[in-house]
Length: 233
Image 1 (tube, rainbow, N blue to C red):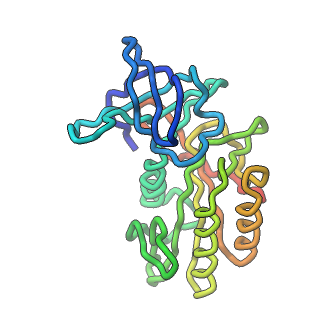
Image 2: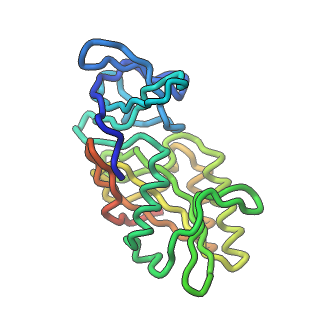
């Protein structure tokens, strides 16, 4: 996935009101950028961090700047734009990268199901459905374990329950973790942050909900899922 060009470099002053961030650009100008990430951005939003912004051409946007990337204290480039994760997974599946889903092709996004909405529907040649919910991951601990969620998320647990219901009806169902940073070695539920999510993840896994995790190669020009990671519960 190509990122909007050119990205503009700045230094993070603060993130606030969840979806806003003040950034000092290289020319000294301070701008307010939209922050497309609903999580806590654990380890990715420290004041003084180097960040990269894109600028929209739409004159009707209240905040034309969008926060795309950040550099951690360890120098790791992270894609913080949660909205990019669905496209990254769609591209990877369309290219046949996930061996676990070989034979399935992406058919539709934003799929309405009985108890809500999931990110995408896949089908194989026989017409069997596989439902996929994508979760963006930006937090990695000191041991190299990517963790999800980075804040308590009732919605994420509800998605797992929906996937389990679909498995009970004879469909395949997958929770797909899109890790937008290159230093992760594995992925685990963040029990310390959201123990209910961790318990739900393990329970639905025992019922047949599949968990896949892929690590992205992140640069200032593009992001692409490149490497599968083990999911450790």
